[in-house]
Image (cartoon, one colour):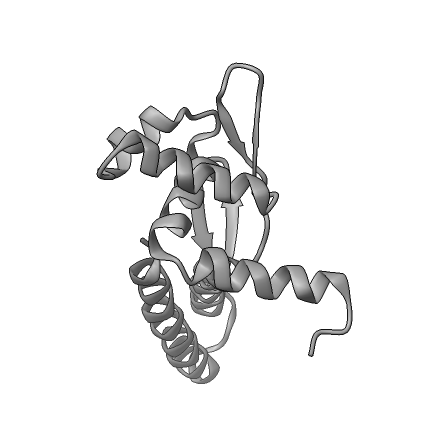
Length: 147
């Protein structure tokens, strides 16, 4: 049983948003775009009706994941829960953390080619390549699980 409010809120978000495909898809759209109306969400996400879009936006608002302004536009409140813990949100982009690890291994590979002597260069290059390929596969996998 969760012992503190943060854990309770986290488990509710896991169940009510991350576990609900359409609600999670609406949340991702709102945090990527910014100010959206229910009609825009309906059109862009191909939902069956504007009222369904409004239902998901109101659900997100009750959970504190979006806020509504006086004009009826919704804006996302960025929170890390579910699979979003493994992403960095930059403007409209969701970038898996593994992407940055992948770039680190590319830098190590270039550095090893430029700076290390011949015997160590090959070993460092092989290790960097293994790290790069592993993180590249993980990055692709993270993108596949997003709606």
